[in-house]
Image (cartoon, rainbow, N blue to C red):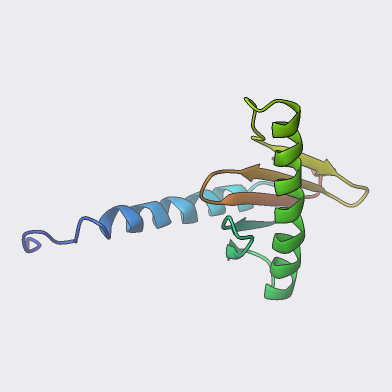
Length: 118
Protein backbone atom coordinates (compact mmCIF):
# COMPACT_ATOMS: atom_id res chain seq x y z
CA UNK A 1 0.00 0.00 0.00
CA UNK A 2 1.40 3.39 -0.99
CA UNK A 3 1.37 6.53 1.12
CA UNK A 4 -0.73 9.43 -0.07
CA UNK A 5 1.11 12.12 -2.04
CA UNK A 6 3.06 14.44 0.23
CA UNK A 7 3.13 11.96 3.10
CA UNK A 8 4.99 12.06 5.36
CA UNK A 9 5.12 15.85 5.37
CA UNK A 10 8.60 17.03 4.30
CA UNK A 11 9.28 18.78 7.61
CA UNK A 12 8.46 15.68 9.71
CA UNK A 13 10.29 12.87 7.90
CA UNK A 14 13.86 14.23 8.27
CA UNK A 15 13.24 14.90 11.96
CA UNK A 16 12.04 11.34 12.55
CA UNK A 17 15.09 10.02 10.71
CA UNK A 18 17.31 12.33 12.77
CA UNK A 19 15.76 11.13 16.04
CA UNK A 20 16.31 7.54 14.95
CA UNK A 21 19.98 8.37 14.32
CA UNK A 22 20.23 9.94 17.78
CA UNK A 23 18.76 6.83 19.42
CA UNK A 24 21.12 4.60 17.46
CA UNK A 25 24.13 6.71 18.47
CA UNK A 26 23.10 6.67 22.14
CA UNK A 27 22.76 2.90 22.10
CA UNK A 28 26.16 2.53 20.42
CA UNK A 29 27.86 4.78 22.98
CA UNK A 30 26.10 3.06 25.90
CA UNK A 31 27.30 -0.33 24.66
CA UNK A 32 30.96 0.55 25.29
CA UNK A 33 32.43 -0.94 28.44
CA UNK A 34 32.79 1.58 31.23
CA UNK A 35 30.17 4.03 29.98
CA UNK A 36 28.06 5.03 32.96
CA UNK A 37 25.72 7.38 31.15
CA UNK A 38 25.06 9.86 28.38
CA UNK A 39 23.33 13.25 28.39
CA UNK A 40 22.44 15.50 25.47
CA UNK A 41 21.49 19.09 26.25
CA UNK A 42 20.40 22.07 24.19
CA UNK A 43 22.20 25.46 24.02
CA UNK A 44 20.27 26.62 27.10
CA UNK A 45 21.69 23.73 29.15
CA UNK A 46 18.39 21.86 29.31
CA UNK A 47 18.72 18.10 28.94
CA UNK A 48 16.85 16.72 25.95
CA UNK A 49 18.01 13.08 26.26
CA UNK A 50 19.63 11.20 29.11
CA UNK A 51 20.33 7.74 30.42
CA UNK A 52 20.61 9.04 34.01
CA UNK A 53 17.93 9.60 36.64
CA UNK A 54 16.22 13.02 36.28
CA UNK A 55 17.92 14.57 39.35
CA UNK A 56 21.40 13.51 38.21
CA UNK A 57 20.63 14.61 34.65
CA UNK A 58 19.60 18.10 35.78
CA UNK A 59 22.68 18.51 37.97
CA UNK A 60 25.18 17.30 35.34
CA UNK A 61 23.56 19.26 32.50
CA UNK A 62 23.48 22.51 34.48
CA UNK A 63 27.04 22.31 35.78
CA UNK A 64 28.70 20.87 32.69
CA UNK A 65 26.94 23.19 30.25
CA UNK A 66 28.41 26.04 32.28
CA UNK A 67 31.88 24.44 32.20
CA UNK A 68 31.61 23.82 28.47
CA UNK A 69 30.48 27.39 27.78
CA UNK A 70 33.28 28.86 29.89
CA UNK A 71 35.85 26.59 28.23
CA UNK A 72 34.65 27.65 24.79
CA UNK A 73 34.92 31.31 25.80
CA UNK A 74 38.50 30.80 26.99
CA UNK A 75 39.49 29.08 23.74
CA UNK A 76 37.92 31.90 21.70
CA UNK A 77 39.51 34.60 23.90
CA UNK A 78 42.93 33.06 23.31
CA UNK A 79 42.31 32.80 19.56
CA UNK A 80 39.11 34.23 18.02
CA UNK A 81 39.55 32.00 14.96
CA UNK A 82 39.50 28.85 17.08
CA UNK A 83 36.64 26.97 18.76
CA UNK A 84 36.17 24.25 21.36
CA UNK A 85 35.47 20.87 19.76
CA UNK A 86 36.01 18.45 22.65
CA UNK A 87 36.57 18.67 26.41
CA UNK A 88 37.80 15.81 28.57
CA UNK A 89 37.93 15.97 32.37
CA UNK A 90 39.46 13.08 34.26
CA UNK A 91 38.85 12.69 37.99
CA UNK A 92 39.73 10.04 40.56
CA UNK A 93 36.32 8.41 40.07
CA UNK A 94 35.63 8.86 36.38
CA UNK A 95 36.02 10.67 33.13
CA UNK A 96 33.68 13.25 31.65
CA UNK A 97 33.82 13.77 27.90
CA UNK A 98 31.96 16.70 26.38
CA UNK A 99 31.43 17.28 22.66
CA UNK A 100 29.77 20.67 22.10
CA UNK A 101 27.99 21.49 18.86
CA UNK A 102 25.86 24.37 17.57
CA UNK A 103 22.47 22.77 18.33
CA UNK A 104 23.29 20.46 21.22
CA UNK A 105 26.07 19.12 23.45
CA UNK A 106 26.84 15.46 24.06
CA UNK A 107 28.31 14.35 27.39
CA UNK A 108 29.55 10.87 28.24
CA UNK A 109 30.51 9.77 31.74
CA UNK A 110 32.71 6.72 31.94
CA UNK A 111 34.94 4.72 34.24
CA UNK A 112 38.36 5.20 32.58
CA UNK A 113 39.77 2.12 34.28
CA UNK A 114 37.48 -0.16 32.28
CA UNK A 115 39.12 -1.92 29.39
CA UNK A 116 37.50 -0.97 26.09
CA UNK A 117 36.31 2.43 27.32
CA UNK A 118 35.39 5.06 24.74
